[in-house]
Amino acid sequence: MFTGSLPALGVLLALLSAAILALGNLGQSRGVRLAAEEKGGGSPVMKLLRVRTWRGGTVLIGLAIILQMGSLALAPLILVQPLGVAALVFTVIFTTRISKKKLSPEIKNAIIIILGGVILYVVVASMVGKQKSIGDGQLIAILSVLTAMLLVSLALWIAGKKSSPRPIMYVLLGGIYSGFIATLGKTVILRVEDLLRGHNVGSASENWLTVVCIVGISIASALSIYYVQYSHTCNSPDVVIAGLTIVDPAVAVLLGITILQEAAGAPIWSIFILVFAGAIAFYGVLKLARAETAEGLDT
Image (tube, rainbow, N blue to C red; front, side, top):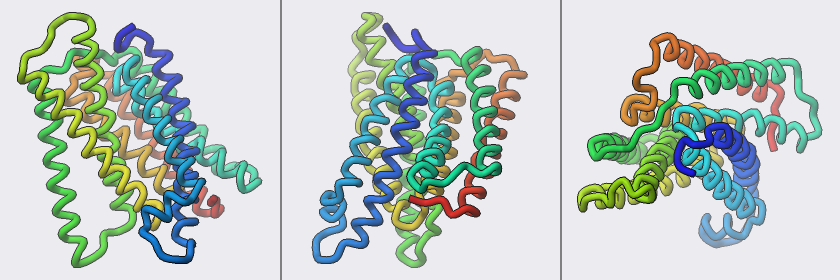
């Protein structure tokens, strides 16, 4: 069984990953607040580690990442990564259950809009999405974009010493690096499967590029974790998850289409429909976020 052989299972794994990710983010958000309220000394990291809710949320997020990598091994990136938007829907459902509130008509309408956009996107993406082996030039291009993003983050960090960035900026940065994790993870999966198929053993340069790719995943993961954790200290969990479910898929799909060429040869009408479906889901996310804010849903 190799990449792209079971796209339907890949979709199911992506949805399961979204549900577990929602629970993990809620747990981490609550854990960050509990750690902030804890009295006494100790570093912020040690305070977090002492909070069982935060530890449980972290384990769930780790499991969600594993499931997401599994979905990427079975289906094109542009097909499964946008399904992460379902995490926001799951978050709302879980939050209402925890707070023992009912879903308002506004929230129900927003969820229907999101699901409509996602379903339309998945149907079309499953028809036109293709997977190809990743060449050295494509991998270098992705790593170059990541390097540029690291320089931007450094500039923002330097600028932040003079004036603190807006809280939403940390959400955006966490989502951007999360998108790189998925894209780079996909390239490693494809290269490893090419090796397992026995197509080639890879030249020295190819092997080194794969190693650099793994290093890139590590850096992107560390930064994504940092920005997401900090986001929980200055944003509500709904804002954090809403931002991540918009930015992460947008970055991954953009890289998947422009660099990985997963939509190469797709008819022009399908591209318009994919953009339209994405816009519908995006509108639903904004509508849902506004409805949640108005009702004060929180955990």
